[in-house]
Image (cartoon, rainbow, N blue to C red; front, side):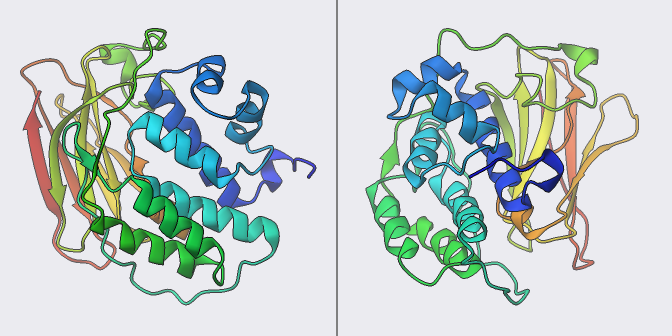
Length: 275
């Protein structure tokens, strides 16, 4: 299939490619190292990560395992992209998304084993579209099996910023998302999951959210009292994946604070953590 121009890339494939690039950055692996640890070649990964080609389901699963991230959200994004690419996508009613599983805590993160892979395979044969993706997401919380911690490569890329130079920049693009610390987690009254993350090498923190709704907003307050950094859910595809705020400088001893503003108009929910 001919690659469309960047502006014409379907949003489903664009979001999937973006999430896959974030996962790769989290592994610290180069394209060559990624190929060596998976069943797909370096050139294949280059096409998948840039949206030139829709990756196979297995490629998405293998990258998730290497990054130590739950498969369910990535597979849901893959289902959306595959449905659009194959023409199976159908309009769906805007309903509240099902509850997502609790965020991973420590190296024994659950929900990424063979059971989920089997569920994904079965769902792929059913009627497509967003409904399949949501069924997949709703079912993953029942697998209590632990999986190995994220694999880190000795050739992990060096951070591209530190301290004040990270202010307002992306933790993924600046290579600060490699093995970050989770300072605090919070689940909102609407069911969204929030985390405060921190990179010791970059001396910067950020917040991320998932299990959200279109219009939800997450703000990261800056320790220096400056204007908060924020991220907002703009579409259904974003609501199915991790969305990050830009970073703020956060040296040891400082406190970072995140506030969630639900689109439903409920009360603002804040939580904080000391670096």
